[in-house]
Length: 119
Image (cartoon, rainbow, N blue to C red; front, side, top):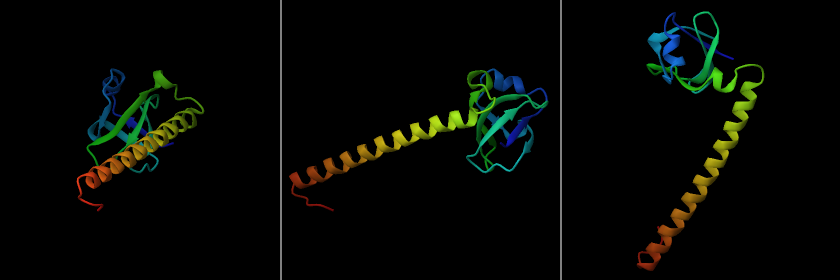
């Protein structure tokens, strides 16, 4: 798992709840994460603080999703968290698609009822 180390003295910002890791607050990036990849955020000593989503092109380098104390970044956390997130995203996409289908149907019925014909 890629790891982003926070510069010495900056870790308390994130432990206090700041969800954005600016590029200037990072000390190093281990591994080669791509934009959107999950990364472990650690302090300058290597102790895990949180996990977040990496962005290689933004000044906001990492968007923290959960702190270590909330989720426990021990063994199996990635499978546990990503499994749940993937399932939730799938449910949200299905709901969105059903909603868009209903919206399109409503638009067509409205157009037909006003004599506009289908597009």
